[in-house]
Length: 204
Image 1 (tube, rainbow, N blue to C red):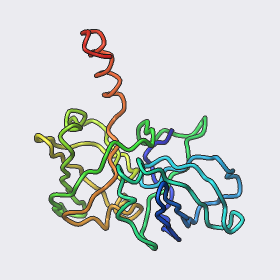
Image 2: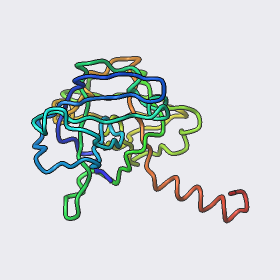
Image 3: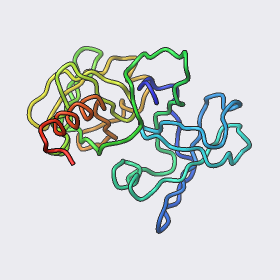
Image 4: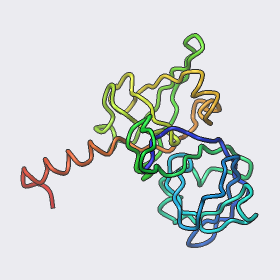
């Protein structure tokens, strides 16, 4: 589990797309001395498993991505040197500053407009039709791993407000119209929908 509070903006050191998998190596400024093979790290909100330390834990770690992960995330569009938001897995006793984030990406959301509001930015996104019911006003949403509060909702579109701290400490400051981000909706809504559908006899 994660919180949606980004701890570092890393970069892609290398990548290789193969027939049945993709190999990524990420660089980070975080202290990796306690990290182990098999640990989880959220990269742009996507939970990845550490499979190697190419430089013996100095600054690089590797992960293998499945075709499903590539299909549902922006990793298919990224290149060497691109910035990625990083958050190690939550530990017992850590502060839950954002909201409960699973690291399981639902799909991508597209930026449709960006407006400057003083030092802040109001960004409007559009989501796929099958995900619009999970976006609610004042609810939580995770974009590229960042825990954010939904300000407005209109059909498939919703807006969030990015404060200067978020802009300075995540890769969301680089978004332009047409950019896509990894989207994870609030998982509580998924559970509620499933429970209600089963009670109504519609769930299988």
